[in-house]
Length: 357
Image (cartoon, rainbow, N blue to C red; front, side, top):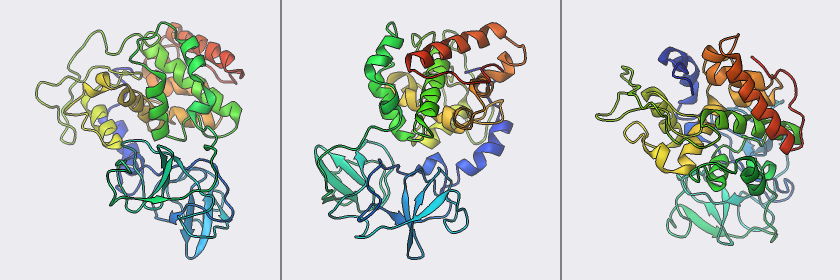
């Protein structure tokens, strides 16, 4: 991540909506795996401003709607491109077929979400930040969920296998584990989970290429030159004795970025920035936080660039465009492009157009 990545001014306009307590990644919606939408299904009552992902089902004024596209809580009766009427009999829990994913510690769940944990199913009786279903019994209730086969793989894990990942980066630091990346990707299910298989593969390749570039092919966990990177901020004041140099796959830098990422992920990264270099899943989450939500010096997030067809070049612009793009450092741009093309080839997909910035 460039040290010119973001300024508080750039952040303030974009992040205002994301940090609404009823919207954005600070209140990330649960994205269920694909399952039968007919008959019984898993739903919650629609809430204005809550983030919903493709496949989420809501009840609104007695009718049911399934999200056809990710959206920040648009009205199902007005924003018909984002929502499609559906049928949902048998309530939001209990027996019959249902929509569920495997439980993930620390992930936000809402009332009505169904998870599988150690072979059993549980329905959230109350909103909770990923409490253990077998321990926090006030938040979770055992339930049944027809069918014995696990849900089809989705998101990043369905696009890049562990074997492929290890073949791509055989000399990486063990800190950058495949398991940590998959766990982080579950926190952002739209990552490599949006659009056609071709689009999903391109996004996975684009993210891995940029992250590899930032870390010397996943060798460096922290920045070599470990400066203070503390900018005066009333909202994100630097903690005494803490330094906010680059850490993790995106080389997260500056106190305000640690503050913003921490708020989105439910972690106190401002007071404990070293957590990004101690916990693999947290490190990957900070990278995906930036990828999914930040525009940096660009005009769109890297995720948006890949799913809307703007191309790999726009991901470079959003990550380090003020330094590398428009002829700033063509060698670095070419290095990113080479990596992207190589990874895309391994995944069996063409790199698409607009590779440069």
